[in-house]
Amino acid sequence: MRLAPHLHRLGNDLVACYLIDTPEGITLIDAGLPGHWHDLERELHSLGKSVDDIRGLVLTHGDSDHIGFAERLRSKHGVPVFVHAADADRARTGDKPKTAVGPMRVGPTLKFFGYSLRKNGLRARYIGEVTEVHDGDVLDLPGKPVIVGMPGHSPGSVAIHVPLADAVFVGDALTTRHVLTGRTGPQPAPFTDDPAEALASLDRIAPLAASWVLPGHGAPWRTAPAKVSDAVRKG
View (cartoon, rainbow, N blue to C red):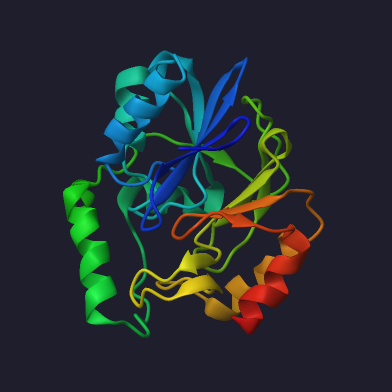
């Protein structure tokens, strides 16, 4: 789905990942669930592009619902996968601490897990090889993604600022649709390692210039990054 020039979303408000289209090629942000591969193929076809046009995949963090088709893309098509060094082991092995589930409602929870099953969420393949990145890195990929460290949801959670797309991709640093309660609007994401640290990290995107703040779960959010921290705290 096209959101704006250069900017496309794959998936939906339950689980989303993103595509940056430029004349130099394509950068992907997150890889959703394994079944989102077919969404990727459809979106590429609509653009007159193919997997061969993808130059890199950048992960906001290493959780299984963000790495879905990453290993397929890497092992079969040679596309490099970038992840913060502090989440490299999580992306390679699935090593994730248990976290408090928090509030949940039966209907939304079943909808989320049902969608995950339909998209082969239980068949996630961890990533054989990753390229580690760090806070402040500017990647040599289409759109020149900038890595902004946002620890909390996981140690290596990051935001990815792509000025060309006028967007900041925040992964699970926040959500605009709680997958376990169905509640919409900006709010902390569930399954977060350190909720207090995650809230504090929201201040790190405040200086960035963008019109889109794009989470891994929930509707795209048209807002200035400077407004995010207060909105999530109030939410």
